[in-house]
Length: 638
Image (cartoon, rainbow, N blue to C red; front, side):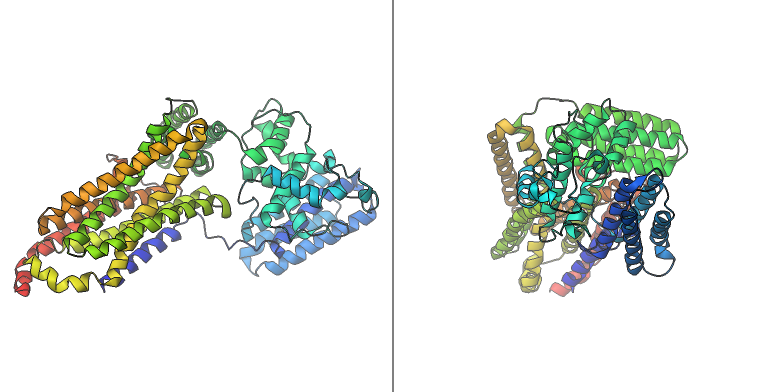
C-alpha cells in the first residue's frame, strides 16, 4: 500500500508539471509530408510564382495564372478538409479563403504574398508543423547530396545551365536568380523536396530522410549567395534562417541597423546556417530583446514586455547558459536572477523599478559577453563535477548506509544499479534532445522541472516514512519482524528508482556543461578530463565518508539524520523544479520578500516557498504524531 501511495504521488506531480502550460496545448505535430504540410507548400508556391508572373498589374502568362488559381483552390480545399467545423478553426479557414479571393481578383503581388503568409502562419500554428530541422545542417553532407541528386538539372552552381536542363520544359529553377531567391526560404525548398513541384520535372524526394532534405534546402540557399561578399557575424537563429525568406531576413537586418544588410544576409546563408554564430551574438540578441521589453512597458504594454523578457531568456540566454556557467557559475546565476527580478518588476507595474532592473540586467549580460576571468580547465571541470554530483552523492550514500544499517547489505546492488543506469540514461537524454528531437528551451526546462519534482516527491515519501519510525521502541525486534515486509523486491526496486532519479537529474546537465567546457578549451581537453575525473573521485569519497560516518550512529539518530537529509534534498529538488517552471513561463512569478539560498533551491517566489513549507510542515507533523503515538507503539512491540 505504501509503495502504491508513493508512486501515485509521483505520477500526480509529474502530470501536474506536464499540465502546466503557458499557452493552450497545441495539437500533435503533423506527420512529415502530410496534407497540412502540403497546404503550406502550395501557399509558398503561389506566393512566389504569382509575383514572378505579374507584369504591370496583370498576369504575364495566362496559363501560369490559371495554374496559380488551381493551386490556390487546392490549398483552400485541402485546408477545409483538415479543419474542424465550428468557430475554433474559423481563423485558418478565413485566411485561406482570403488568399484564394485575392488571387482570383488579380490583386497586387504584395497583397497576395501577405494573404499567403497569413494563411501559412495560421496553418503552421494550428497543426504544429515543424519549420526548422532537428539539428544544424552539415555542409559536407549537403554538398554530397546536391552533387548526386540535383546537379544534373540545376547545375553545380545552381545556374540550371546543364545539357539536361536545356531539354526540360519548363526549365529547372535557377537558384541564383535574384527574383526567385528573394522569396525562397529553406522551409519552402524543404517542402518542394518533400512533395515535388506539379507540372515540372521536379519529382518528390520524400525517400530522403528529413535531415537530408533539410541539408539540401539550406545548401540551395547557400548556392544562391555563393561568391557574394560577406559581412558577419549576424545574430540569427536556426529557426529564423530556416523559415524566413531572403526578403524577410533582409528587412529584419535593415531594421536592426546592420551597416551592410546584403553582406550580412550573404554571411547568414553561407556560414551561419552550417556553423552557427559566435556565443556573444546570442547575448547581443538577448540584450536587444531586454531593451524591447523595457520599451514595451514604457508604451503601456506590460504583457508584451513580459513576453519579450521571457523570449530573451529562453531564446537568447538559455542556449548560451551551459557555456557561460562553465566559465563563471556565479555570474550566470546573477543573470538568471536578473531575469526573474525584471519579470517581477513588470508584474508589479512600477516603471522606475522596471527601468532599473532592465539596466541592471543589461549590464550583467554585457559583462557575461566579455572574456571575464581566465578559465582554468582543470579547476572548472573539477568544480562542475563536484557541484553537480554532490546532491546525488549524498543521497546515494544515505541509501547505501541505510540498507547496510538495516542488516540488508545485499540490497546495495539495487542502489548501485540505479545510479549506474542513470549515467548512460543521462547521456542518452542529452543526445536525444540535442540531435534526434527538436526540443525548445522551455520544453527542456519543463523536463528538468518534472524530473526534479518527481525526485522531490519520492524523497519526501521516503523521509516521511523514515521519520515516522524514529521513536519506535525495541528497534532490534521491530526490524527483525518487519524487515522482509519493508525490504521486499518491490521496495528494493523503489530504492533503485530513487538512486536512479538522484543521479539522472544531474547526469544530462553535467554532459552539457562538459561539452561547453571542451569547446571553450579546445587545446586543453586533457586538463578538462583530468578535472572531471578528480571531481568524480571527490564526490565518491564524500559518499563513502558519509556512508561510514552515518552507520556508526544508533538506530534512532541514524533514521533522524537520514530522514532530515532526504527532507532537505526534497526541499531543494522541489524548489528547483518550481523555479524552472517559473523561469520558462509555465507558472506566473509570485515574488515575495524572502532570503534566497540557491544551493538549497530556495528562491523568493511564493509558489516555491509554499511547496517547500508544505514539505516541512508534513515532516514536522509526522514527527509530532510519532512522538504522541510512542506509548501505543511500544506496547505493540512487546
